[in-house]
Image (cartoon, rainbow, N blue to C red; front, side):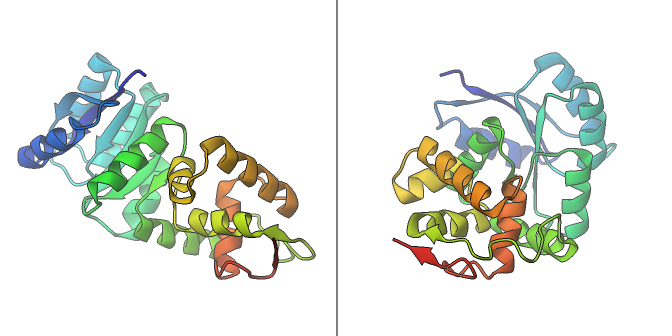
Length: 225
């Protein structure tokens, strides 16, 4: 398996070195470079062509939000994940608007960080659980294209309900598979079935639906064995 090539962007050198030490324990991850601000990040991205950039927000010269816009305007294939101490909703929404694929807080447990990085590499979005809750509430308030009548008359299996609740927690397919001791392909099949039953288009709508009904495991659908 080819390692996930990463660029670390943070103005605190001790944090960068500590993160490099953590990531070096993972055989499928490789830190190929570092940058101390957004402008240096742009230069390093051009030079190193990383798969994923872990980007702080508050930095001198050019902050993470502006750097994200500059980098993705020139190299849209790069996956950028904000790694920050900021729990401000404004920074979260601006990051999403700028094209970031994830928003993680620096107080994450290492194992969760590794799993979320792998989710981004696989094409999924990644949010720290507390930030996932914030963004789901925002989108749920707007509706996000999820009609109130969704799910009426439909029934889900007990396993589908377990998966729905883990989607609300912000877990990616691999993390769900590990939690339930099933394969990722089985998780994908369940999600495909659930989306079909509910006539929803994507994972965000599914999470909004589940969050709206309370994520209790039963909700308006009810369950069957």
